Length: 225
Image (cartoon, rainbow, N blue to C red; front, side, top):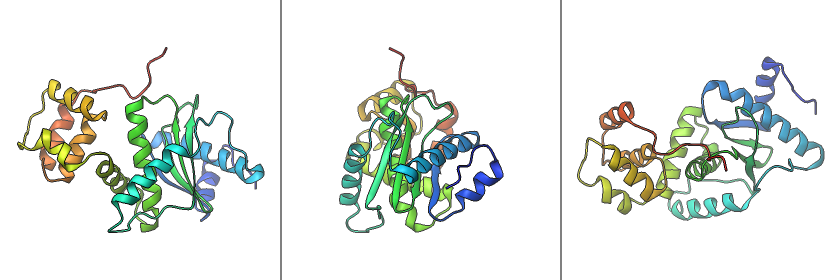
């Protein structure tokens, strides 16, 4: 297979091939080419000799645990359909990599930057894994990301636990409350708030207002040793 290097037009054409598809790319549009090029490089290497990069920090175990939990919760609806083989891991030192979910032939791929903090690593790993399981629904990339977020948050945050904080129909969230919620769930406050919205505990208007006043509860990147 010919490797695509720096031709953006050819890169997009290559991604139209059914056997290699980017499902969800995290970050801004500027990060998409970085994620796509890394995915091309990794899948070309896999296609050639079935060898993954030596700096891939994990391959299956965390993803398998997430799939097991999600499928158990999805047993009644069976909306999640995962491929038999999942490949995933963290890559260190890839400038501009934000993380992505993709499919390659009969495989699901989930790749993250190793520099993420534990809070965001766990969150994004769940979201991207859910995206692979929902890919068969043929949603747009925006719709797929929204459904993946909803599915991941449902698996990570039980209604009972979320209701402990949002059962009083709050509309204002002081920084002390945000920090308490984020620390309790070990998740960014804005994503716990999204789960509360999914459960009907807060409105879209409250979400919008909180977004404009929100302060980061924890840095996405790991602190340097």
